[in-house]
Structures are given as structure tokens and as C-alpha cells.
Amino acid sequence: MLFLICKNEIFRKFILLLTFSFQFQKQAVKKDVFQTFAEKVRDHKELESRWAVLQETRVEYFRGKDFVSFLRNHPELKDLLESDKNLEIEDIANSLLRKNLIVRCDRVVKTVRPGKRKLSTWPAHLEIFPDQMFSDNDAFFAWTFVNRRPLWQTLLSFCWPVLTLAICLFPVYPHQVKLLILYFCAGVLLLILCLLLLRALAFGALWIVLGKRVWFFPNILAEEATLKELFQFWPQKDEGERPKWTARLFYAVVAVLVILLLRHHAPDEAARARYQKRVSNIIDDVLEWSPRLALSGMMADSNVTDDGVEGTPQPDHTEGETISDLFEADEVGDAGDSDHHH
Image 1: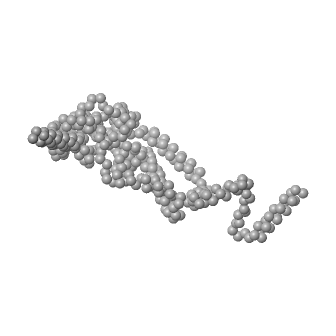
Image 2: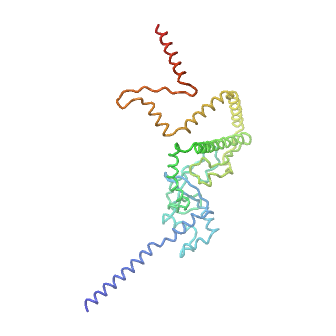
Image 3: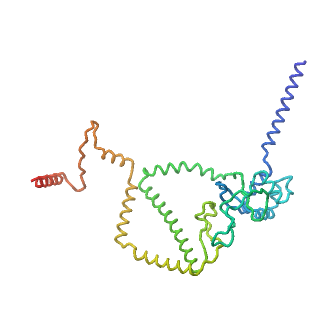
């Protein structure tokens, strides 16, 4: 009887221990409401943000004044905070700072650069601000957690090994496929070069004529730009000072002299034909290369037999020649050698 009582008591304690452990794990698995709120705010498209370099790390950041206006326009996001949904915007931001979900940053360059009227609105390089308190007066805040990767990025990561293998197998592709890949890559490279040239020409012409700095596709060469910002067509607002007319006149004269110099030294039709023939020969060599030809070329170059005796290379029969023509050429060569000795 005593044994049954002890057995039931041990079983009851074991059940209580399992229940307590399950509840503890459930509370641990439950995500912090501020973490959920931060992820929702970061994924929202109406909160304007940029990418910058913070201590050799690329981070996404936003401005304090944009965060305040964003929460005022979307108060429904505060419901994610549950019991803390009645907090002020400043208190919510300070809670995010205390939980290390965001960090306050400051611009590295704090002086106006020559030719600029004011500091950059979105600096490309940041540093950690000493006072980690929220402010909406020229304050920047960077997200500290890793954002969830979209599904298409995960699927795209599995395509890189396949693409690498396809590039390595380029020499064994059919000739038509080689031509297609070659012309496609050459077309993309030509498009990029033409786009950069047109940007430079448009910038130079507008700078000389109107005195304004206008870059179409302004972020196409930026390192910290996102894919959407990379193909932004409309130029940014000119924040620099208007250039002097003497500088504009000087560069206009230089541009005219360069154009006249290039026109004077332009290649003629014969030089262009020679260059085109040389380039086409190089392209043909690349497209016609194959491992079989490379192996046969190596075997033809090494004329050494298995016994270590150098073999005699066989003459190549060119197209249109017969055996009698070859013998006649050999006889003429021998006769020329005998006359030379006499």
C-alpha cells in the first residue's frame, strides 16, 4: 500500500514537471511584441529608408522624423504592442533602442563639402551615436536584426551553382549557342557603355549651357543603392552651388577642342577594316576552341616517341595540292640547296 502511494506521488510530480516545462517553453517561444512590431515597421513600404555603411557593415537605416510621421499616419500598427500600445512614439522608439532592435547613428561627414549648400540628406557612411536616445532632429536609426529573406531570394541562391557550372562548360557548347551567348554579352556591355556615355554627355551639356548638375539614373554607380534605387530614372535635386560662367566657358572650349582632335585622328576605312578583321579572327579562335582540338594540338607539338627518340613530323597536305606537286616542290628545294653549296 505504501509502495502504491509513493508510486502515485512520483507520477504526480512527474506530470507537474512536464506541465511546467511545457509552459516555460511556450513562453520562451513566444516572440517579443516589440520584435514583431519592428519587423512589421521595417517591412512596411511607406517608411522611407536607405542603405549605408556602419563600421564596415552594410545596414538599412531611417530618419527619426520619418519614423514619427509614419506612426502618426499608421496608428493601427501600435496594436501589435498589446499592453504597450498607448505609449508615445518617443517611448516606443526608446523601447526599441533598449531592446537593441535599432541603434542611433550619426553621419561621418559633418561638414559641408566644397560645392555643396548643405549636408547630404541620406549619408552613405554612418557611425554610432554616443547618446542612445530617440530624437527626430537630424537623427538616424539603423536596424540591428537581420530581415527575413524573401522566397525568391532563397530560390535564386540555388541557381548560382548551376550558373557557375554552365559558365565552366562554355567551351563544349554548340557553335550557335556560343554565338548567341557572345552577342548577348557584347550587347549588354555595349548598352552599359552607351548608357554611361549618354549620362556623361547629358550632364556636360546641361552643366555648360544651364549651369545645373543633372545625372539621369543618378544611383546607377552607387554601391549602397537597392535594386529599386539603382534604376531610378529621374535625377535628384541639385544641391550644389551654381558654377561660375568662366569655368563653364573653359570646359566648353576644352570639349570643342577634344571633339576636333578626335575627328582629325579618326581612323579611315582601311584601318577600320583591318581592326574588324583582327577582332573577328580572335572571336573565331575563341568560338572554335574545344578540348579535342587542344589535345590534338598538344600531341602534334610533342613529337617524342615512347622510346625517347624525337619523331619526324609529317608534312601537312594543304587543300588543292597533290602528291606530285609536293615531290616537285621537294626537288626544287633540293636543287636550290645544291646550287647554294656549289
